[in-house]
Length: 336
Image 1 (cartoon, one colour):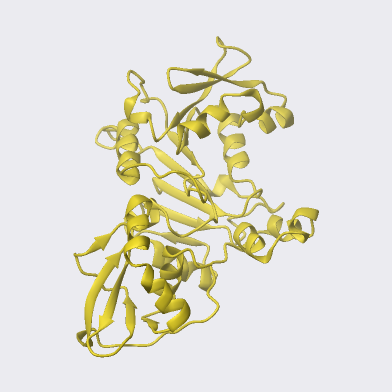
Image 2 (spheres, rainbow, N blue to C red; image 1 turned 30 degrees about the vertical axis):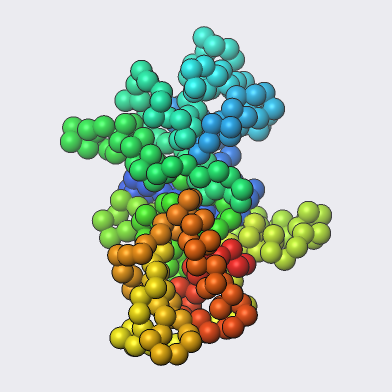
């Protein structure tokens, strides 16, 4: 844990950026130095970066003086980094339009429509709030749009003997359900990390790394503040502890040969017993019917299979292969 946090308790970006992974997701409580820390480090070292947001409306807010993401950096360091919106992007420059370029802001939802931008001299992407909050609109084929944008920036760098662009993905602990965890089949791993207190995970090929900011010293300090003393338990657990809990578990081993596949969604498969009125949720899936676990796919699943929620909550005849798949099932139906 000492490597993840500085001696003062903030996120240790010196350590994180020294890792070889190209995609580093950092997920955890608000206010522990995720965005501020990476901004401060990159600007101090004079490294230009791409500031990526999911939606254009979010990016537009960053183009206003009151929404300038560099505002606290300016206050703390005496710099004067300002946003200059133009042509669907935002140029963040020192002092005025003719000043040095610090970063460029783009929105994933519209980046495919932007033409004529050369990203060849950008080595970092900072993807802020990549996990959508409740109520945020989905982006069609979001994960594909993200990969396409990364490819646009990265190009053939590795073939030319250069290091790949490093994409830093910052997220608050809103939910496990997001296009990135789903496409990378990471949701069950995330649950195991949370329940086991594991803060760092690396993919076998070392291209991806996920850091869960558990046991944050700053979060512990914030539990004594007025906001958190008057917040609900759910808010505290979401914002401070990355807690995705279940109140009552029904874990058992069942032979799938006694069941018929009903539907698969995301990383789980849901099965109906051939003769008894019960259901079993497993990590084993079938191809059809299949629903994505985010966006319109998730909404369709929730509508088409609403009775599964009733069976779970009321009839209590839904069983699970593991704690991990139960947590995912609950997330899919927003049962927190």
